[in-house]
Image 1 (spheres, rainbow, N blue to C red):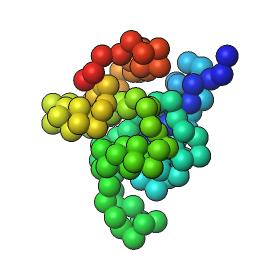
Image 2: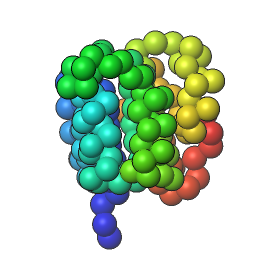
Image 3: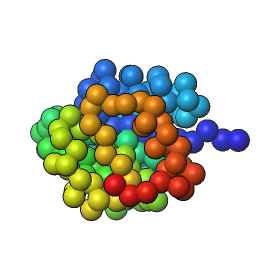
Length: 136
């Protein structure tokens, strides 16, 4: 059985490493990205089965200081076909309700507030990849 491929995009290296370690231990193939450029590049290379996306990112220095939010990154990945059909899970340091409407518009299946309850996240990922997840 092939491992399911997950892309995590967050500007926090601590969050990225913690999620990467836990998801790899749960049996997933994981790629990480710290900004929009890297997320879009890795999505194009790997065509993830699921995307975990932070909402807020600092300006993307490699792209001349352009500011992207997680919803724009997801939209661009879908527009380019690199994450078509991949469910998205939004993670944020903000209150969940602040982003629920945008998450629904982006097609997200869940929104998690940091610090993330990892067991709940892993269960949501499993449900998403099995096709049993409910919308945000």
